[in-house]
Structure formats: structure tokens, C-alpha cells
Amino acid sequence: MFLAGPQKPKARTRGSLITALDIGSHKICCLIARVDDAGRPNVIGIGHHLSQGLRSGVVVDIDAAASAIGQAVHAAEHMAGETISEVIINISGNHLQSLIHQTAVPLSGEITDAQINKALTLSRQEIARNEAQQLIHAIPMHFAVDGQAGIKDPRGLYGDTLNVSIHLVTANVNNVKNLAACVQRKHLEIDGMVASPFAAGLSALVDDELELGATVLDMGGGTTNIGVFQNGHLVFADCIPIGGQHITMDIARGLTTPVAQAERMKTLYGSAIATASDERELIDVPQVGEEETGNHVPRSLLVGVIQPRVEEILELVRERLEASGHHHSAGRRVILTGGASQLQGLRDLAQAILDKQVRHGRPMRVNGLAESTAGPAFAVAAGLLLYPLQHFSNSELAVMETAPPRNLIGQIRAWLRENL
Image 1 (cartoon, helix red, strand yellow):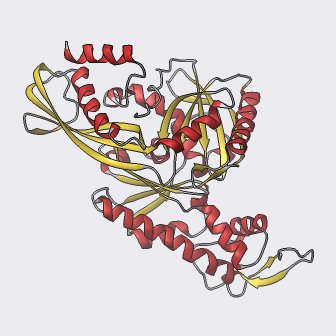
Image 2 (tube, rainbow, N blue to C red):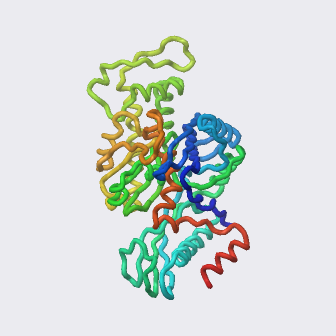
């Protein structure tokens, strides 16, 4: 049976709390925010912890993952002076799937939310045939009434047929269940699930990029998430199971140094592009199992390990975009988010391989973030805070993602609303 996703997050009023839980392969971050007078989230609690029990966005050890989640949430609660019971979480991993579904609904008068929701229901039924997938997002993108395309909001119009193009984002049911089990072990309820590239885009893109077209690359520890936005909508989502941790492991193996030292060298001396001074600059490379200082090697050896892996990631991104048909249609803007995106030289290399204009994205529209948490690494967490507010403030988003009723009575009520 198709596993119904969580109900859409409830509307947030002034003074209410929102809790975002970014569950990544490298770090777990919890942000607690209070909605201010302007309707924006104001962060009052921050907690983060080294991720455990996850690999490339997938749970591999429930106990370890739950423990790390609990540590991050507890730190945020302590700072905020609040006890939270509901969280909005992100979904990442190579099991994310993105598809466009076309559906037509016959009309008998004025177009209402009920008829648009009926189109969403028909699309869900298509997904329900695949028991291995769970619906995360159902986003109406394009509307046409009696063949007239280009309609942004059809409500209030009259016609005989409503055609809707809906972007469906799904995830593997068992992977979602495992993630939910980790959260629920800490006595927390899931108030919403958001695909990581969607959350990153909500926080890092400016309005013109959302409308004109842009691609978000959220480069985390174990995954690189791809999100294409156009006309204010997420039109494509994908995930490559390679991230910053893979670069770190390449360094550890290639230079035979401990993993912790490999991460340190990547952060301090690493670059995605070679420079003329790399041969002259020496760096200290501690060796595995040796207590001595270690070898002094040219920085070019480190860059020579990093660059091929980064090129692989970016070439895979280009291939996924070309296969989806969005490489050219989504504009020439690429926004880099995620901790791994801060690698020196990455922006220039991305511009060369993707043939697009590239910039680093930082959380926007969120108040109260400290300087240390206002960088690209916290874009997804900030986007999770914005999600319920965007969800209810935008008229087009208001009809999105109504989860299928969980019980028989709910199903009967939904049928009566749509057919009577």
C-alpha cells in the first residue's frame, strides 16, 4: 500500500515556533525559530552535531543516527529555552526521483481548489501504483483551460477542461521510513518533509533567479543535490551520491594520512584548480600510524587528488541536467550551497565545466543566524524554516502537497468533497 506522506505543515502565525532538522551525511543541524511580526523566521536556537549512522543520505545505523539527531536537537532546545515536539526534515539521497505528470480534469463551472486538488489526486494515484516510492512533493507548474496555456492561477476561471502539469518528487519508501524512525525515537513528530534541493533553493535564490531560471547545487558530505527552478517552481530534482566526504577519503587514501588530517588539509590547503605556486608550496602530511611529524609534500599532490573527484561530480551534474532537458532551458545561473561547495577554486571549475554563471548561495529571508551559521553549509536548514511560510503565503503553493487521507473516514470525506 502507498505510504502517505506527512500532512502539509500547519500555518504559522506570529510568535509560533518552527523547527528545522537538516539530517546530512556529514552533520546534523537543528534550527529553532520564532515567526516575527514581518512573518519571517527569527532563529532562537541552533544545535549541530557530527552525523553518524548515515551514508549518502541513507540511514545505515538507526541507533547511531538517532543519537546524533538527539544531540543536535537537545543543543538547540537548550539555547532556545524551549522544548519542541515537531520538526520539518529534509529528504536526500540517490533514491530521489523527479517526474512530470500531465492530467486533465473535466469542468462544470468555475475552477476551484477542489478541482485542482482532484488533478493532484489523479497524479498521486499514478505514484501509488509503485509501492516502493513515497510522494514528497506534488507541485502544480503549468495550467491550461480549454487549450489556453500560460495560466498561472486558474481559480475563478470558467471552462470545460482543466489541464495541469504537475512535478512529482518521490523517495524510496523504506529509506523514508528509516529516517522517520530515527526522528521518532527521540519522541519527535515529523511536521513536514522537504527535498533537500527544494529547501536549498528556498533560502539561497533571489526572486529573479526563481522566476527566470536557475540551478541549485547543494554539495554536502555524502551527496550533491540538484534542483532546477523556473517560473517560481521547482521543475527538476536529482541527487548524485558523491560529496565532500568522498574527496576527504580520496585524500586519506592517496596521501596515506588519517581521515581527520585529510579533512583538515582539504579545508586549509585544498583547491579544485591547480595554480603555478602549488609546486613550490610545501604542506605537512602526517602518515597513518606514525607519531612523527610526517612528510612534507608539494601542495600540487593534494590538488592532484582533489581535482579529478570534483570534475567527476560536476560532469555527472552536467550529464543529469542534459538528460533531463534542463541544461539550457533553466537559464545560465548556478548557485552553490552546502559545506563542500566552499572548497577553493570550485566556483571557477564549475563555471568551466557547466558553462554557466556560478555564485555561492547563503541563507536569506531568515533572521538571527550567527555569522558561523549564515554560510552555504546552512542553506538547507534555513530553507526548511522557510518552507511552511512560503507554503502558505504563496497562493500557488497553497494547493500543493495535501497528503492522501490516512484512514477510511478521511478518504470518504475527500471523495464527498470532490464529487458532490
